[in-house]
Amino acid sequence: MPELIWGVVLGVGAWVLVGTSSRSGLVARIAPYLRDVSPVARRESRPRGVIDFLGALTPHPIASARAWWRNRPTATRKRVDEEIATFLDRASIVLGAGVSVHAMWERLGRNPAGVLGEEAATISREVSAGVSLDDAYATSDARLAHDGWSRFLGQLSASRRHGTPIADIVRSIAVEERSAAGRRLIELASARETVMLLPLVFVILPMTVLVAVFPGVVALGSLPV
Image 1 (cartoon, rainbow, N blue to C red):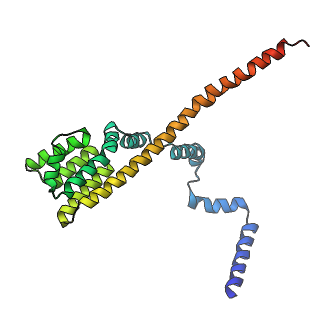
Image 2: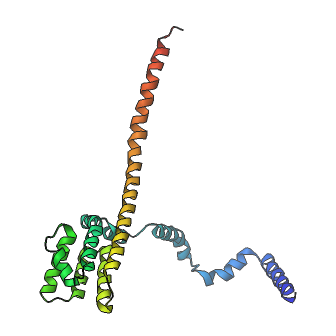
Image 3: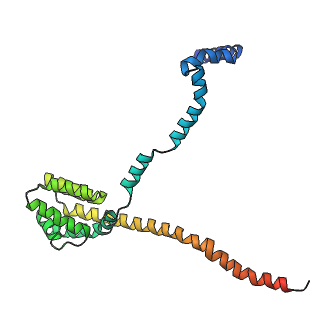
């Protein structure tokens, strides 16, 4: 209860202070602590405020171009999206047969087909030349820059360090990539469906209405009044 009384008293006091003081006097006392009130600043404040507001709304062109270039769907990325589920299935079968990781790269890269087959052949050649698996994985990850491929290489590295079986993990990654491919296909179909509505609404439908209505209009115009 005392806190409520003190709150009411302070509120009434602040209201009386503001109400009895002129607005111009309050502005003159408070404004110097908030912003520059010199005549030059007053003349420049309005255009500068508009420019700052527009600058905050407008994205930086270089940053926008860099983000678009980094996130663009490249041809290599599209091919990796198409191939990775099948490649991971083959890798899980080879690893499930008890083959080592190095022998897996050799087998998958023996007859390279597609981007990932060539990548497997490249990793096999680098490892045979004396490059460590971690370095070969890092180079391959930088070349493709694909999330599923990066996760696959990371699981291979973790399995080699900890000595855990990898075949089941690779198989689960293949299932996830296949599900992601299905989602991408549905999204692509939805986008194509929206694009197909444009000629339907703006070309086919107006022509259908015109063909259906025009003979009636002509017939009505030819009737005697």
